[in-house]
Length: 118
Image 1 (cartoon, rainbow, N blue to C red):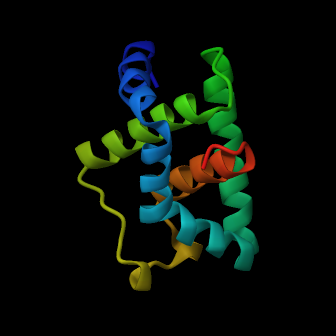
Image 2 (cartoon, rainbow, N blue to C red; image 1 turned 45 degrees about the vertical axis):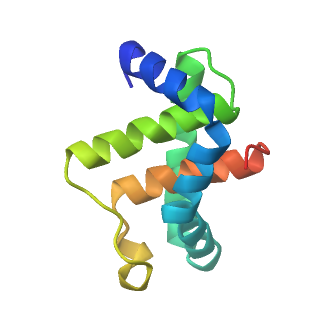
C-alpha cells in the first residue's frame, strides 16, 4: 500500500470504519473465518495474511484499530475490483483453494474481530 493510496483510503474509511469492516465481514470475512475454524490450512493462510497486514500497518505507524483496518481493507477491495475479481458465491467457495484476496480480506476481518473493531 503506497502512502498516497493509504492516506486517501484512510480518509474515506474514517467516516464510517465500522460500516466498511462490516461490509467486508458480510461479503467475505464471516465465511472465511468459519472456514478457518474448520480447515487447518485455511487458518494457517489467514494467520500469515494477518501477519502481513500487521506488518504493513506497523510500517506506516498505524495502530490495529478500526480506521486503519477499514482503510487497508478498502485498498484490498479497490485492488480486487481493478483486477476484475469478485468474491464467489458462498456455495461455490472452495476455501482450501481460496484466492489471495479472500484470504487477505478474511485476515483483515480476523484482526478487526480480535481488536474489537466489529
